Picture 1: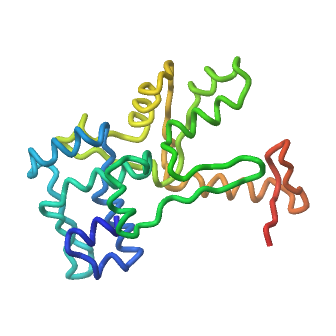
Picture 2 (picture 1 turned 180 degrees about the vertical axis):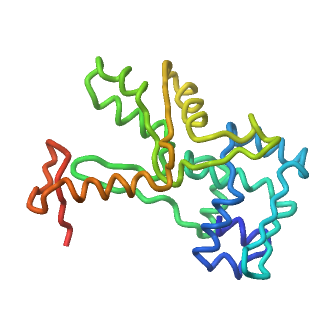
Length: 214
């Protein structure tokens, strides 16, 4: 979102982390298909035009002719490897980094559907269909709204992920979003924190307990 604000002429505001997050949450859209969404936005600029007044300030963010970039915000979460982001990386935007937890590597540039498939395929074959039918999304990055008039062009996270998995040949998928995705993870952490004893150390076989990194 910061790079999008810079392109739209708001380079000074792009340094304000809390403002960037607010603009992302208010103006960002998740496309069903990015290329089709961009074509639609450029053919119908009035329908995707984005303007945001920051309450309590004189700041107004108007993306104007850059309003089509609203779809990049959501797409980046689900597929940072889309070719359209290469220009941003070239200009210095950091790529999602790889991380290793235990013996497992998580690749930052992998799209969401492929990451799920890789995880599921590490499980016994007889369990895989069951796992694909029980996908639950939680967290603020899955909390996308569909504005009036953009249904079918913009989608919610469950529909986006279902579509991506279907494209990769996974059928009988059922994806759900928690009731309040932005807060459900925190609530789960609170419950976990109260329920798990402090001296219950992390175990990689059970995949539970406390892992102390300090």
